[in-house]
Length: 328
Ligand SMILES: [Zn+2]
Image (cartoon, rainbow, N blue to C red; front, side):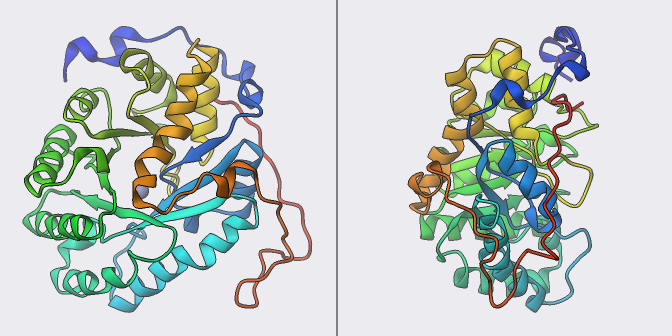
């Protein structure tokens, strides 16, 4: 571990959690560029909308257990541009997605080949803002093969790339992901490298890539550390996300971190870049994001239907949850 940049050396004064809530950022708008809403509830959607999240990106990923056939991929991709987008709209949140073969399932080569044939049928659809999330998990040869193949697809389509960096051996995996992207002739400005930490951020920014940070509860990258990263590196080409999914995660990570940044003295303009504008700028290179679509928050009509289905069950009001903004 690089000792000069270790968080432990620079731990900020702790703000008592009970003193903090989202009041500090009331009225601000947020964009969460990485959140797996398929795994979340309507309560989450309501709480996200209430806390100022106006748009999000749902990357295609692993479902927690391996798919056994190509039709599961087809149905999943269809749901990202269909039902899930509709569900999001019912809470006034604009839903985009990235489409790709995740690194874990790249290791099933027979199925991966079929997925590669399927991808071109989805990546050109409306609201698809990138190829993602792709990259390395265990850093196997098969993962590299399909990462490379999907970079070629990104080049061909002109879409941005959303890279998942591995949780094990992160530094090496991040460097390797960037080297390969450059080798394939991708413009780093069209590549968003995700799940950064203090050990990877400098190199990612120096090489001209976008650096995304996932705020994970109960793990290393909590939002107090993120505030320190923002103070050290500034807001340029940095964005944060929740990566909330079926595991323990927090779909309010973006507004909570914005609130903490504000309380810790980071200016509104910088907060806006990190929690809203930078993600839009990076993914709008797809030609699929128009801020007008969500900036004047559309009116919500929950009586709308998607292929005959609504999000309503007996007219219950979704709950809102305003708990502490600290994620540690
Ligand atoms: Zn993810």
